[in-house]
Length: 264
Image (tube, rainbow, N blue to C red):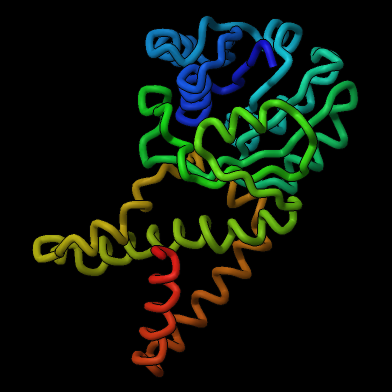
């Protein structure tokens, strides 16, 4: 891997560039993004310079798509006549079935490896990028294709997990998407019904509503491309809230056991 093109130089794309440099990558890193993001990314050392999609695809042997999912899908539809035949295209999309399906339809001249680094912040943009963002976090790949990029991911300190797209989407509906929606609903209902409760709230409310600060612009595509699994998780969560009213003690015990297991 001698050159990398980052398509979408925001939090994840910028963090990839910073992580590569920190891990010792000496090749060229090009960025395809807005003029402002390119300027900030160059200043931070996340990329060497900006480029058009056509230039980056023609030069780089790794293309990392870190746009919103709709942007990733659109880019995949354009890439095939532009890419090098020895290139690898990978992505950071939060859902995988739609992305992998589009790659199978649209990308024929080079290899594709679906990916999802399970890392992030409430803040967006390359200004929030962090070389350590991926350390200790899962990085899901949709196949075990042999490529040096996987060694770099290990060098970032990430934990590689291989999952097929459907299983990935089911698990993230429960482990990522449902927590986001629960936090959003909690903040929304308190804001509507008892906003004055903020005056007597302890740190628990801050912890429970942290995810509610996330932007819907980011989540719109996630909700649209994983709607079936998210709906199933929401239905189960609503049913659990009803069960909680019937037996507080039993649900507290179940919840405590799982929460402790997350921290072991």
